[in-house]
Image 1 (cartoon, rainbow, N blue to C red):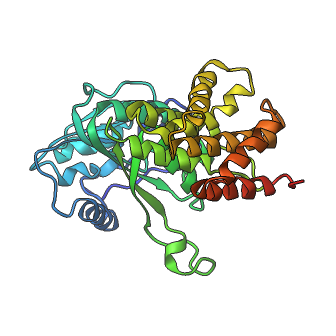
Image 2 (image 1 turned 135 degrees about the vertical axis):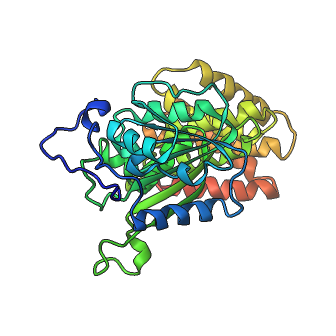
Length: 361
């Protein structure tokens, strides 16, 4: 049998009906091309230099040559899924256990928390419902289980097309993993540079991005905090925050997992301004009350931190043009911070933030 390659049926319009579209997507074959074999072995050696033993491994989108699990079947429990009947015929010839499956619409055939590793190589761009698929991957993974995915660089003119092109910008796909409770532990370009004359050195534009993400657990309060700060810091060219809702979710999760983390709760209060200004007051009020009570507690350095976060909240409302806090209180907070050596540094940060959008009178 020949090496497996894609059948380019350009007359067939791509739709969310993956079973129909990919029915005859692959030529008959019983082995990957030499280039694909080299790529697959490089990926496995890079991510798992000690090899994999005794793991439950699932691959979504095996392709016509059996995917990565074909190298792992001797020492692991493997199982593959694909929407292409042609791909499954090839897998059957190679002795790879696989099932016809439309991941856009069907639950993955595993119980919650039973899989160690999921591969999804060059398939997310084919999904009409990528959010559903990632939720299903997260569901079946064990705590701290691993997802490995590859996605095409957007400068690669991918056939048949990308369902959601912007999702495959590097920052966007990273954020997609983060907001779905994965800690990204590797992201790296690999494959040939398609624009060697325009992008030098070679690493600038690779064929694909390789992603390795770990399913987050209840022990990841600090990771959620870091994710919240990442999203909180995302701004457009006018300095307006572009990901405050994602930051809220992450700060909330961090605080719920670690109730003694005062900074996480202060940041949750600040970020909830973006819900408060649109009338969602209940959650904001609870955390705002905690913030003001801490300001009056007299316990340093917590009360100084509380004054700092209150002042930054004031500036956030000022920036949004939805001020609900008193200017006199803001000035009192600045004065209070100036009276303590540690508070003076915090006051300076507040003033520097103020100067970015409002002159000090």
